Length: 270
DNA sequence: TTTATTTGACCAAC
DNA sequence: GTTGGTCAAATAAA
Image (cartoon, rainbow, N blue to C red; front, top):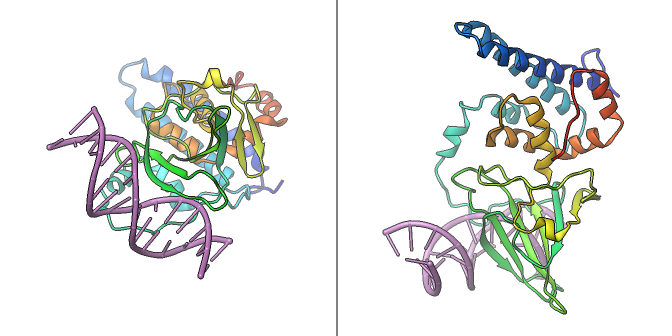
């Protein structure tokens, strides 16, 4: 593993996250006392610094496909500075102006129902070459009001004896209305498949729930570091941050390393 | 009137 | 040149 400014990046990352958590606990204590706003502001600044450093370290780890640009980092760094402006950016005619999506960051499920508990809006349908059934394109209902970029493609793969749908999900829900499902990594409900992730669901458990599977790890990880319940922005930040990297961290011996630092209690996935 | 769906056009990727 | 993903006008439904 490459050094990060003379320090092992892995250790540096752990150190920054632990510091961030420690500052959060201090802040929590401080907020219970009156007239400590100056100290609180200082702690907030330190927490911000820790997470910024952590993001920088993660971003430096060489996964170029998923590395954030500095602009993206700054975007999440300054929650009130640019995003509001972007929300108001005027619509323009972007018909046909798109990049064909890559399969990385996607995951699939096959089920007897299209219903997954999320609010989707259909925006297109296409006949697919060598396919008996058309492919339907859906985006999150909150694409514009909450800038949720989740999309899915649904295609019937068989009609007999029952209709089976093959659904491919792209992106994570960042909208507030999304419910976090009870899918977990440790029950092996998700199977990594090449660059994408195949979601082998337990259908009964799944019905009526969201299937924003990748956000599970993200949201719980961040919950662990957050003193209060995370906002949509928090999960966005984590979700945008390349969950596959978290998966890599969490599923490996690195968890032992996390524990070694002693400050982090068990990280639970639902 | 508002919201959702359908469908043809557009165009980048292959 | 073909294919597939997205847009937006037209249309339907609530």
